[in-house]
Each structure stands twice: as C-alpha cells, then as structure tokens.
Length: 391
Ligand SMILES: *Cc1c(COP(=O)(O)O)cnc(C)c1O
Image 1 (cartoon, rainbow, N blue to C red):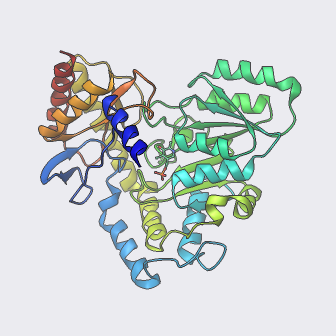
Image 2 (tube, helix red, strand yellow):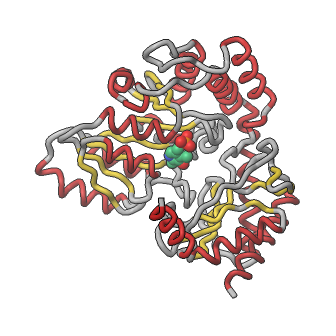
C-alpha cells in the first residue's frame, strides 16, 4: 500500500499525476464539466455522430429488440445478427473480403498482432505507433524492429539489413493518422517497401476512418492506396461516435483470428446496441451527409489553425482534425490547459508517457459540429494561454 502512495507522490512531484474529469452532459460541441458548460476541443467524436438522432435511434431499437447485453463471447452464444451485419458492412466499406469486430481498438491491436504473427516472424513498427500496437507486438512472439517515425528511407535500410537472414512473415505496421501529432503515415512509400520485400502492411486508422478520403474510408483512400493495405484496423469509438473496433482483411486472416486472438475469444461481445449504432453511423459516413460533415470538419480545422497562426503559434500542416500545440514541459502545459478550462475551453494537455519527454502539448481536436465564432474565440484563448505559460 505505502509504496503505491509513494509512486503517486513522485508522479505528482514530476507534474505527471493524472486525474479524471467528469462530463455531466451529452457529448456535443459543448459539454458540461464541473458544473460549467465549456467548448469541447479534445473529443475524437469528430463528426458529432455520438449524438446523431439516427445513431441513437439505432442503438435504442437494437437494445429494445435484442437486449442490453449479448450474454456471451462470440464463440459461445454472443455472436448476434447485429455483429454480422456490421462486419459485412465494414468489409465492403474497406474493400476487404471479411471483417471482424473487437470490443475496442486496444483489444483489436493486441489480438490481431498476437493472433496473426508468431515466433520467426518480424514486425516493423513506427516509433510513434499507438500503445495498443506496441502491446500487441509484445504479446506476439514475433521479433519487433522499431523504425524512426514516418521515415520510409530508414525503414528501407532496416529491411535491407534484415533481408539476408529472413525466415518467416514480415509485417509493416503503422498508424494511418498518428494520434498525438495528427500527421499521416507515408503510406505510398510503405506500400512500395512491402511490395519490394514481400511483406504485409497493416494500418491502424483509428483517427482516419470516417474523416479522411472522399468517401471517409480513411488515410489509405486519402493517399490513394486503400487497396494496397492488407490489414485495415479501425475503431468505432472516434469518428463513428460509438465503441469497438474492427479488422478488415483477407478471409483466412479473419478465420485465424477467430481461432487464435485471445482478446476476441476470451471476452463478452459488444452489446447489440453498439454494433447497431455503428452500422447507422457507417451509413451516414458513406453517404452524402458524411461528405458534408467532412467538409465542415475540414473548414473548421482551417479556421482554427488560421487563428492560431495569426497569434504567432506554429502549427504543422496536415489534413487530420488533430492539432497539437507543442508546449514542452508538463507544468506549463497543464497550467495552460487549466487556464483554458477556466475560460470555458476544454483542451487536454498531453504528457509523457503518452508523448516523449520534452514534447508535452496541448492537443486540440476539431469537430464538424463546432461553430466558427466559437473556434475564433478558442484560438485566441489558446494563444493567450500558451503565451501566458511561457512567462
Ligand atoms: C484510440 C486508438 C486506439 C484504441 O482504440 P479504442 O477503441 O479507444 O480502444 C488504437 N489505435 C489508435 C491509433 C488510436 O488512436
């Protein structure tokens, strides 16, 4: 007991202690937090679908018809028609043979890598990949080689180095959109490398699905190489506004995961309302309304970033709704975040171990349902908070 308290104390001294904040309203453009209404600038509900009437109605209808829970894992009694329908829709959406649902993105990445790769295989993993990919690499018996973030030339050199003693399967795995920086993976270069070395390519498009590409099919569609990706992982809890995750890919990979992925096998399947809501969200994403929402989101990003730049802040150029404002050390970062909250803007500060030491940041995310005037005020407030924290 006591040493747990010591650990907490030392986290607090380093400015790294994390605490939960409770939202007491629906997840809209604004939320109520600590009894106050604030502009929400740290949600992954990019298109606002978490509160879309059709999505809520789908969840309600399936819950009323099929119950609040599935009562079992997929391999026992918990594989229901709503799971199958969503899997078929996701496979079609990504242009894959089959798809398989997981209970979360974390469960998906850990199960996919553990289930499909084994001793003798080699995984090349981007240095800034999501923690769930890192843990999936640890759970698989394959060896992992980490390549410098987004650096296809460095990856090519590492692959050339490994090639003479190759034994098993090779995989390149990358986030499509990197969650803390918002930049995109160099997918066309990764495709060339996977072809040159007869490797597989897996893309985690948690932040790209629904948001990027003309049809919302993600970073692969945006960069013109959707059909070259072998394993499409994505989540349902971000732009799709619900919960859960999937892998879309070859039928044999899906069948093997049903037999081997521990996070899939040993866990109660998603409640019926969850896949039903995701199916409704997917229909919106793939239709005209989705295109309209993506347009609004892109306009909001442009507007907000322009405001930050007018205030003298440096913001990287990329098409994702994730806008990091690098602040360096934990204390000024959290001071800026607290000051913003006091002014009515909820922008999360991000610290190690989520980001490397010295790379703390305010991580703002845009939503399609934000209003322009609100974003102008928010940009000015961020500039003031960051400047104030400098001094
Ligand atoms: C959020 C995220 C995950 C985890 O997904 P959950 O459904 O929230 O568990 C995985 N990968 C990336 C890149 C993410 O951003």
